[in-house]
Amino acid sequence: MGSMSRRVLGCAWMIAGLSVNLAAQAATPAQLDAVRAKSLAWFYTHQNGDGSWQTASGIKTQPTALAMDALANAGLKSARPYAMAQAWLANAPTSSNDSLSRQVNALAHSGANVSALTQRLITQRDDTTKSWGAYAKYQGGFPDTALAMDALLASGAAYADTGSGLGFIAYKQNADGGWPNSATEPNSAASRLIPTAQNVLTLSRYKPLGWNVDSYLTNGVNWLKSQQKGDGGFAEDTGATIGNPYDTALVYQALNQAKLAGNAAAIGAQTTLDNAQTFLVNNQGTDGSWGGDALATAVALQTLPATTLADTDKDGVPDVVEALLGTNPGVADAHGLTAGNGQSVIGLTASLLVANATVGVPFTYTLSASGGTAPYIYAIAAGTLPDGLSLNPGSGVISGTPTRNGPFNFNYQATDASSASLSTAGQIVVAAAAVEDGDVPTLPEWGAILMAALLMLSQLLQNRKRRS
Image (tube, rainbow, N blue to C red; front, side):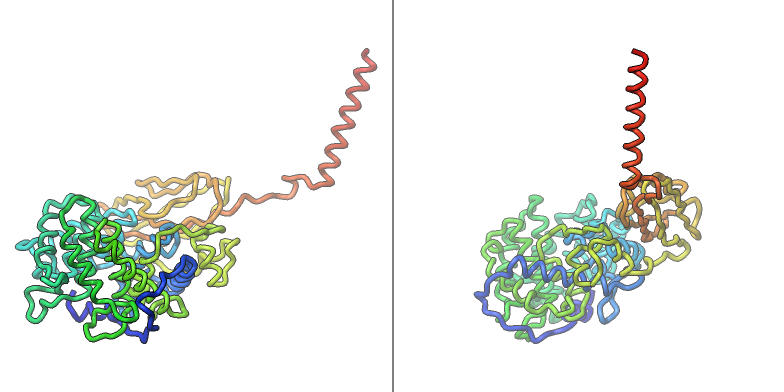
């Protein structure tokens, strides 16, 4: 990704942030819970009909991938917005190494098969340095190399040149501890915030695997700490005097990941972390977003602790979010908040699955695909079918008898004979078994049944006396 594109993503907007004292207290758990609920509500109401989210400039892949990880961090991988986003992202065309890396990363976390995408990412590297630039075969730079290494790690791929990729990152570190966007382009060798934060984030993920990167982490962490603004935020713009939400959230993630990896400098940076988080809390918009920007909001949401939110009615929308949206957390009434389907693949299409079923009643539904090259193979790519139902991969028939009520969101993947595949969102809403009149006796009916039983018992006793 070029420097101008990074600026669009990383510095999409600048706000007059509230000034906070650098000795400010950390945000309370209650504050963080409120921030999470508001930002999730924003994502539920700002998803595109095709399942994506986008920035003001129209960029979709990066914010959608990061939003998926943010939803997963809140325990919402089975929610309909996540399934729709996964369907869109699985079929989205990507050209830059930045977008492809984020696509691989998010889909791998969703459980999807990313082997083909991973192989494509490897072929797009600069083979001379075994690093990644903005596009296929470009000279290596940052944060593209770090993003690609992150994606390979998430995919679980057996990558033989891991040491070379990490070495490229390590040996391009500047003497001041930061990293540049590129060490080969003119006027680009100065340390910058976004590449440094991303490199620290990536090296921190490899450190627990035994890679000797701690000294590079220490230098990077110390450089990042020195860049904090007076309001507690961080900014890629070297001339800025106030923080930027996207940049601040990215630095927070980097420092926190280094802390989790056991880096001593990051462990000692708790005040820096607290002030950065306070900046994010103070600068969240009343609508739940940060500047109405899907990218900044997704990254900020990922700074919150992982959790699983209560969803009483099992409709995929947490109770705390339903309270903000005005829906009933006790009734499965929120699954219609989003509409639409994932992006299709040229030559191969599959229909959106929306069906109803009833507990205890046999159910059958046949998935369908067209175009491409028959025959087709079907699989559940994300989410789950209702309890009691199963999918026949060859015929595409979903059948069985549902055993539990509620809405069930999932993605199914259709793959043709040429290995072209697409992922499509689906939902089956299972209703509780109906109680017909007469199935359960009323109170008067119970009384009549009891009286009849007593009369029968009395008659039996009298007959026994006569016989004796």
